[in-house]
Length: 400
Image 1 (tube, rainbow, N blue to C red):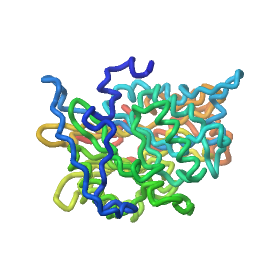
Image 2 (image 1 turned 90 degrees about the vertical axis):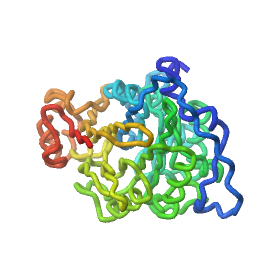
Image 3 (image 1 turned 135 degrees about the vertical axis):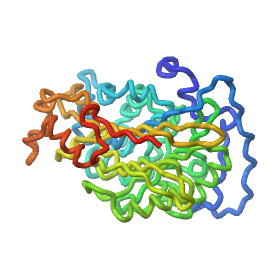
């Protein structure tokens, strides 16, 4: 594909040849219960370049919440759709990361199921095309909206990803027990990184199958982490869909699940769902490890009628591999959703936003949002993120 040829193969390949076509049983998975012995695991791959880098970067942006206004922004006069504009302002950052993750909150069921916005979303599959063109390697689909179109929506979305972009790791949803049991591993320069995605629930919609959507469950988390470690994962990034919508700080429930994830062996936690940015924090696991937590990176794109939902974030994590894995630094870069007509609808880094752009942001037309401005965004980030946020650079940086 054109996207693949634009960058080295190792940037896009998400599993090594040793993993191709193999699914691994997750010991103790809910819904498994077959009692079958675990399949033999492949030998650890060797580092195939003597000068392979020992430091890799992981990037994640928040929820792609495809309201009607978002998908209408990419409609063309000839009836086609394109959404490259949504990601254009951050594409350089995405492409530069070794592993780039997007929170695809709404199901990409495509036009055959009828496009729809809130409250039961179904989004155009061209959104996924734009995510891949921007450089994303992993799509997180485990969210409270995963079952908005039932099992049919999950099947349609997975069929799209497998046929159009088989190189992308899609996690959080499954259309079979086999798909549920497949380990969510990416490989870069001989190092395996696990990306674990869970959701707190599915808006009260019962699971059509126990494996349809991966949910927060302590036994499941412990089993998943043990399985990916056994398969050679040197780093584990957990991406839970959790928390209370619009809450300024993490809930007690988020803190409880963060403790479960940290104690089970997660190296870094990057959360979504509250639709707003929440603080960055470093917690300590039961064995004394420092575990960075981005409690919520908010929305990447949406048309929610609130000022605070226009400010999301990009999480960036540096991983040092030296006989193990260490998180050496984390950066939280605030982003601003610029609501506008057509292809002017996009998301900027806060550092690149201006008062002129803010004055034209359609959020200003929403009730109670008339004072939205660039300075309001800066002040909001300073209040929400605390003293560690540097307004001059538009970032929060933590170093181990």
